[in-house]
Amino acid sequence: MQEKILKARPGMPMLILSIALYIIFIGLIVLGAILLNNNNSIGGLPLALGIIGVVFGFIPFLGLKALKPQEAIVLSLFGEYIGTIREPGFYFVNPFSTAYNPAAKTRLGQSSDVDSSAKLASTVDGKTTYVPDNSKKISLKIMTLSNSRQKVNDVLGNPVEISIAVMWRVVDTAKAVFNVDNFKEYLSLQCDSAVRNIVRVYPYDIAPGIDTTGDGEPDEGSLRGSSALVAERIRKEIQDKVEEAGLEIIEARITYLAYAPEIAAAMLQRQQASAIIDARKMIVDGAVGMVEMALEKLNENNIVELDEERKAAMVSNLLVVLCGNKDAQPIVNSGSLY
Image (cartoon, rainbow, N blue to C red; front, top):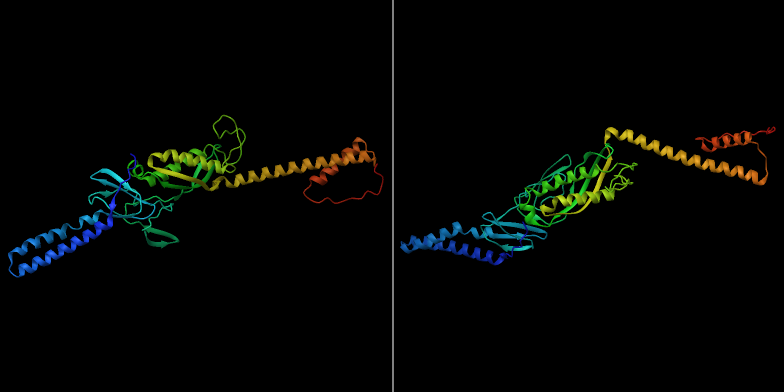
């Protein structure tokens, strides 16, 4: 179903007319009562007209609708969709038309989607509870859905915890209202599904032999190192799912990413061990280079001639000094080298 823009009539003239008619009907009641009090039989007619007008005079007021900026209202008449009003202003529509919004009273606990007219109900333990009104208006503002933290297994089977923030808005009110049962709950469900579908393709850290793009070639994609790419893929996944609901996903961002508590300590030890190995490798490479340079300088300047056994001893001593964790204690040899 496609959205139809309804061109409603201005509401102020109808409001003034309805108030004026109400005053006239009240005047007819007073006039009829005075005439009947004077035993004038003609007073029954204005009295009856006045009572009928007062009883049914509220009906035109039901057609008055006021919209703020970035608000819309979907109207149906006897079950048929007649159009949507999107422009702010004060309008008059068919009094028998009804506004329809199945998500009017739905507020996701993790969302910032709070009705502008919602009233503060209570604050308990720092958590504020809002009570939405009965308005059937649809907000066209950009809203943020902070998806709750969930546990997902990555491509290696390691459990990770991840949460995302999704910026979204309604672009087609007819689709949002009529194509899905409740577009807010539908969006939340699709966010959970998209996160699981994308996260299980990536490892938490770079792992060899893992294809994250689907082209059949291993790459260096990971949740931690390619967070922007992962978030963009999640956004596209959600957008494809909510297209029929008339929603636009503007942006998705990863707000929390960590290993699950049951393996976090083990993974931390693994990362520390990997860092220590990399550091040791760098130290050894540097020490070997310094030993080679020292031997070359000694040979170039003919400072001392060393046989293979003495060279091996010198290399061993230098490597111990350069690769050790503690400062070496110097020992002065006052005798012969041999």
